[in-house]
Picture 1 (cartoon, rainbow, N blue to C red):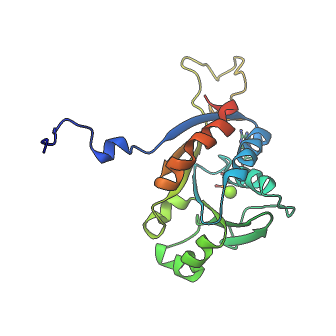
Picture 2: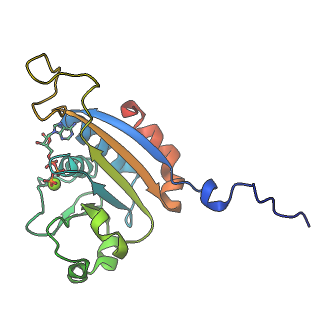
Length: 196
Ligand SMILES: Nc1ncnc2c1ncn2[C@@H]1O[C@H](COP(=O)(O)OP(=O)(O)OP(=O)(O)O)[C@@H](O)[C@H]1O
Ligand SMILES: [Mg+2]
């Protein structure tokens, strides 16, 4: 029997999570991007959304809702923790920004909730320890201003005074676990128009 070559890529290298970097210009594009992902989703799928306040997590969720034929207006569930919408599939929309501790997720009955629909969790990276290991990480961020850009009086070309672009967002997708590896070719195909 052949010896294992210590330099052969190990499982962990072969199974580097697949990653895509996208860019949208404006909330409508972020909604459209999420909407074209929706037909690929099935009950049990989990999307963990990260990004600063105002990065576009709720906006992305609204697009998913549209793609799932949900008619209700999806708003930020910040004060309710979890909202449930019914469309072609059930969409659970959680926002755990205000959770004081991971233990508070016990009240949500996460295992049942997760298997009964598609689940989106804003700030979900804060509770990864109680989530399944198969999920799509959707990390939204503001692009950095171009090098050498002077925001003090010159044409800032869409950058606001804080140095951030107003309508541009970088959206990184990282697929964790087998479900997302299998979905990756179709996912890449669906959203290639926003690839950076
Ligand atoms: N490319 C873009 N994608 C998404 N939102 C954008 C974009 N450009 C501008 N915006 C604006 O940024 C804001 C995003 O707000 P949203 O509530 O979706 O953020 P959030 O990440 O959910 O914030 P929070 O952490 O407070 O829940 C909206 O006002 C939206 O119009
Ligand atoms: Mg939000």
